[in-house]
Amino acid sequence: MDDQFFWEWQDNLPESTDLDKQVLDKVKAGYFNLINYPPLLEDVVRMAIVDPILFIGYFYLTPFYVKSEEPIDIAVPDDDVIIKDRIDTLVLKDQFWLMIIESKKASFSIEEGLAQILAYMLGSPHPDKISFGMIASGSEFIFVKLVKGNPPRYALSKGFLMRNPGNDLYQVLRILKRLTQLTSA
Image (cartoon, rainbow, N blue to C red; front, side, top):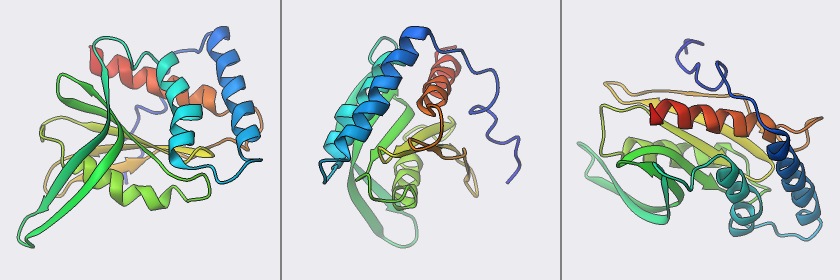
C-alpha cells in the first residue's frame, strides 16, 4: 500500500495541551490499575479509556454526536449474505461516519476487530466519502482509513501501545483531533 494513502495520522497533527496530557496520564494510570482486576471487558475499556479520550478530543460537541450500540446490516452482493452486528461506538457528523470504535477485551488482539470495523465502514451510506476508524483494545489503538471504490482501499496506522515508554495516548489524541479538523472543514 502506498505510504501516502493514509497520511492523515502522521501529518499536521495539532499539539496536545498540558491539561490534555494530565488527563491522558490519568487514563493510562487507570488502565494499569484496571488490569490488576481481570477480566477487563469492553464496556470497562470504553468507559475508562476510550470515552475520556473522545471527551477531550471534542467528539461530544457540535458538529459531532455519538451513538452507541448501533445495529448494522452489511449485504454482500452476489453472495446473498447479510452480516448483523452492533457498533460499540459511532461518532457521526451529518450522517458521515467519521469514527468507529470497536472496543475489544484487553486480552484480544487488534486483528480480531479489523475485519469487523472494515465491514462497518463499508456499510456507510456515503460511498463518496472517506471513512476513518479506530480500533481500541484498551492496551492498543490503531487507526484505519477506507476509501470505497472498486476495489475498496484501506490502510492502517502503526499501533499505539499503553506499554510503550512515555504515553502513546498523546499521539492517539492528536490523531483524533486531526481527523476532527479534516471533517469539520
